[in-house]
Each structure stands twice: as structure tokens, then as C-alpha cells.
Image (cartoon, rainbow, N blue to C red; front, side, top):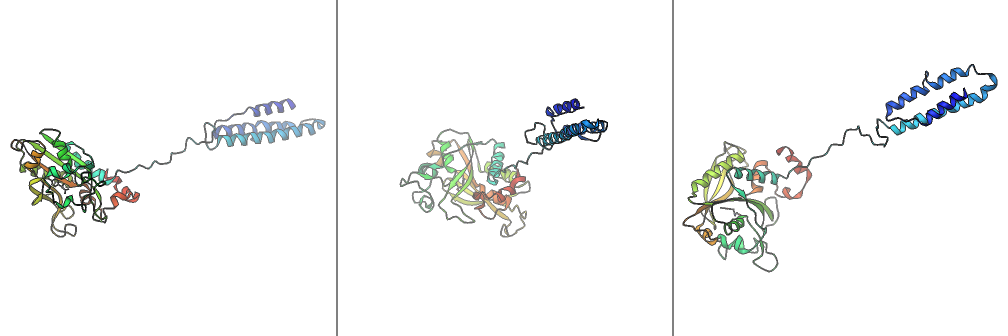
Length: 339
Ligand code: DAH
């Protein structure tokens, strides 16, 4: 019997288990009522009286040893571990929280996508500009208020280094570097010296479009605007053009769309008028074409510019412009489903 005890002890010493189920199998094999150690306990009854003391002790030690071994194997195996490293590879992974795209990026992409379908390609220009590209080439008179410190951020003391106040500067960057046909869309950030409030910010975003070719007419502009408005705000949208003034377009207009909240009936959002203003536009002033080296007798063009914040507000009714730049995760997460 002592041989059998030693044999089982040696077996126990080399035991290995890959998981909890295997540990349980081993427990049954050695420690259950039908296990190897119980069988020895049964045999113990028939052992000669003078051997009982010695064998009884050895048997008890074996049982304690077996229990310890099984317990430590169980700990190693953990709850279903397969590699004994203490990491539960079968556990479901913690959910990865997806970020959301910024509402201004979403709307900018939508605007670009609509114009891309009409054959417009993206053009970009610098945010730090010179007077010529932002004002002079675009027909701004020398005493135009936009050139004032009150409205424009100048960099340092040099009046010729400034932050662009509109993306129209990209028009002249492109027109001075290539001849028509030109069909570009220019998204970008612009800066104005405004006190920050719910309704104004010192930086915001615009998208400019410019089309210059032979025989471009106001009808082309109007049709492009109608297409854009309906793609952006739905097929029932109507547009209205009101005469306006911009130094770089002649004639100039401002475009309203039928209020996208009440459908034109009149509500608090459109102040009862049924219309909301969305952008400025016009036929490129021949003087601008000439300043950029494009023959205004041969070519004509239209231009339009809109604020991305404005369009986003119309689509999502964001009440406070500051929300766009505060990075409040609760605000940004509201746009998860808008993707
Ligand atoms: N640059 C104008 C602004 O910042 C917007 C604008 C109006 C752009 C008319 C144009 C345009 O291209 O034709 O208010």
C-alpha cells in the first residue's frame, strides 16, 4: 500500500490542467467518493493493525496534498483561462466608444459633395493673407469699413498681413494662377474682429463657389442655387433672390430659402416671414476678372459664399454659436446619428 501512496503522490506532483473543467476531472479522479484516494481509504480497513499508524498518517498526508494541489490548479486555471496567465480571454471586450464627426465637418462635407456633383473641385488658400487677395483685388474701396481694425485682425504692425475675413480671397488666388474654365469650391475658416456671443464669433467657416467660363449667366447661377438648396434642404425647398451689394459682384444678390422648419408658412424661426437668408452671391464684377488677368470681354462668371455655421444652424437649430468651438462631448454626441 505504501507503494501505491507514493505512486499517487508522484502523479499529483506532475499534474497539469488547462482550464477549470480539466481541474474538475482531476478532482473527481483523486478526491471524489469513487476516486483513487477513497479507494485507498477503503483498502486501509484491511491493513494489519501494526501498520495502521504509519499508513494512516501517510494516507492523511496524501489526501491533504491532493486537496492542496487541486486547489492550486483551480486558482491557476482561473475562471476558464486557457493559458493560465490570469487573463480571461473568453470575456467580452469592453465596448469601444466611437467618436463623432463635428457638425460643421458634416455640413461642410455635404455642401462640398453637392457642388462636386456639379463638377466643382476643391481649392484652398491661406488663412493668413495679404490685403490684395482679401480686399484690393475684390474691388473693396480704400476706405471700405472691412479694412478697418474694428473688423479685421491684422498680424503685427504690418497692414498687409491679416487674417482673411472671407474665403473670397481664394477666388483671386485661383484666378491669378489659372485661366478659365474655373469651377471651384473653397471651404475654409475665416476671422473677424467681433465680440464673442451666442450670435457672433471671431472665427467661423465659409464655403465659396466660383464658376468662370465663356457665356456664364445669371440663369446658371440661379439654377445652381436652386439645385444646391433642394439637395441640402429637401426637394420642396423654394429659393428667393433679393438684390444686394458686394464689391466683387455685379449684380449681387442674397438668397433666401423657404423656411425649412415651417415650410414657408411662417413661424418664430423665420420671424413669420416664411423665408430664411442663407447666402450671398452674384456675377463676378468684370473689374475683379481684369485684376486677376482674365479677359472680361471673353469670360464671365458667378460666385457665391455661405457660412457653414449658418447652414448648420438651419439644419440642426443650434442656438448658440459658441457650442461649435467648446468641444462639449454632450453636444458633439448629439450628431452621432447624423453621419
Ligand atoms: N464674401 C462674402 C462674405 O463674407 C460672401 C459672398 C457674397 C461671397 C457674395 C461671394 C459672393 O462669392 O458672390 O460675406
